[in-house]
Image (tube, one colour):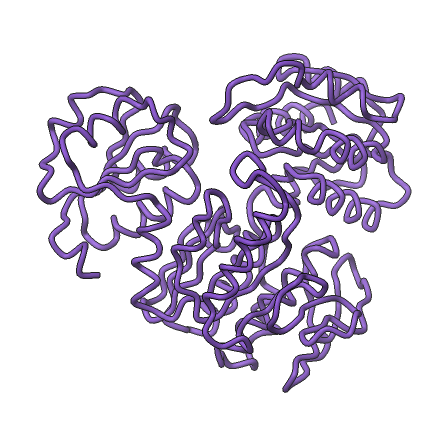
Length: 449
């Protein structure tokens, strides 16, 4: 990367973000002096500090003056507020500044890039693909939007000839990439605060698909308005999971591709959405030419991604599941998985809506996706980068849910609400800070049971 040859210091504004922290780890292993800012400490920032990365939690303008602007790169995301003191401080001092997506694009230019996009499913698909290639001893670096259970990291370093990346549609970031092989899991409306409407979202995904030079290497869910090869489950797709059955709580299936067939593959993740994710990842690995002999074992050994249908408690009397689901389609997928695995047990979902704009845009769809659960508890909307929208609250969403067993709660009273319920399957869903209280709830529920 010629543009980074003379860069010795790299400062990340928002270093605790899942995508930013993977890049920080990457450059740290390359011998760069890495530091950064984030608003609040987290498990990710603790891990980065343990790896030798300096992190600030206050926007102190003296940080800007302490770094030489001649050999420092400042990396930021579009989620950083425009009024950020650090952002403007670095701009005023004329530092070299790049968005995270542009930096990732520079890295992928030097490699064979395998990129997975989609409004949901991309993190798990990317993690499966990265694991398949790493298990085959391919020279691959994998940037994940979640923490892989197999590697306990959002970065897999196994060489630099190939990169596997999660292609983020937010702010059209994925258009900065250079995909040799690409997968698209879904194009459901999301991030309408950025795109305005579904038509512009589809336009962006089409532009991403057009970045792939060979359309034989563009794999996407069947039914999407794209060229390339289709992926699906028992639907006559080009890359298709066939003969699907459940044995001992796992999926067993055959994989049909345009050229070969793999039989009796085992996936230990619940949910048809994960079966699709695995089919896509296998197809992309086969397109790359990675040897298929080790794929069955690698897939069987894949443990999943943290906060993607992650079991925190799994006993006969109580199951606690943690999941990142923050879109109606993702909640529907979680419900399907729960009903398939636990058809006769009472379930309770705790959901923390993420963003006022998303809650507003998909209020009816959220209500429809939450209604089928036996019991529903809503936490306050997690604002992230947004300011409140008049009239858009968790109470507003609760009123739309057509289920009598529903209520509002907060993190303080939540444990008591869970204890008062007779549900034995408890799901904690959301992309905000709900994940940070799951461990506490797990420990208290274990004590009670």
